[in-house]
Length: 356
Image 1 (cartoon, rainbow, N blue to C red):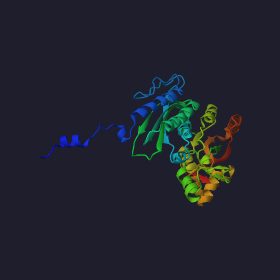
Image 2 (image 1 turned 180 degrees about the vertical axis):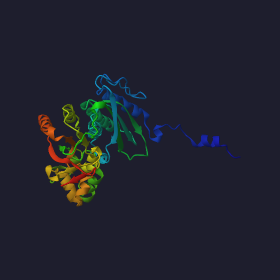
Image 3 (image 1 turned 120 degrees about the vertical axis):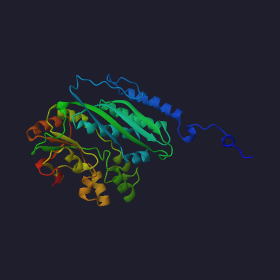
Image 4 (image 1 turned 90 degrees about the vertical axis):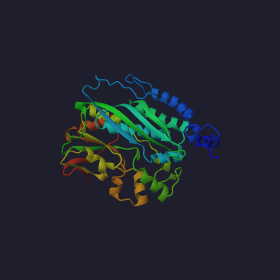
């Protein structure tokens, strides 16, 4: 006699199957969430109206600080820099990279960061790794005066390799409408002031990893004379925040535009703020390119144009300063002990960067 489908099921299923059997450990996730709450609370201010764990984060905008406010938002990730973090077991700095990158993106438009949301997805949840990542996010949020009010930690077994995760974040900031910096005030003759980067920041890592690990066959812990550092340490230098110096420049009303130099380098990022009919002329000899970029170029015989549109080449932020305000701007930067160099000027022409 044939058995029914119900009888077959009863005979083949020996025990109850849980979510943990499918690879998602809810108990471990709950423990991580408790630690994340503690780290996030360290970033809270009086504008935060909710606890971590709600369906949405609540934040009260200070209308006295931002009359006629405009909200400014940005979302980004850390990219394949995470691969280096996995190899080295260094996880706290990638959280700082993420926050600082997002902070810079809105600060160049005159915005003050208000709050941050993170997204971390992994295959198998490793409590200590997650905690280190969020610790870095928390530290960077606090340093930038930004509240970490929420996020998502997703367990996705089978989607990510063991020991790997992906990381992304969203930042919200505010600026009074009359203080927005878009670049529309840029004029022909304005001076380009470059501020140094702290290495690759968070861009160009796919090419850098190929050149260092595949072409040169360096190990991540190998000391390289040309870099005066270990390969992994050179690659893991933290993406710096320019918020403090940006506030000083904008507070003194000496900038007509600013560009955060990320993926695409100077070549593709500076034109994003140029008005129609204006281009930028950049003097390549005006700053010293850090050894890391020079070594990468040598390893792969990389064309100069390719380097300039892949890496920041040692310039992480460009401030466009009216010629009549350059003396004041330099004084501000000097008082802030901020290294800088005059790297070019705004010229009439196509909305692009030319090099000489």
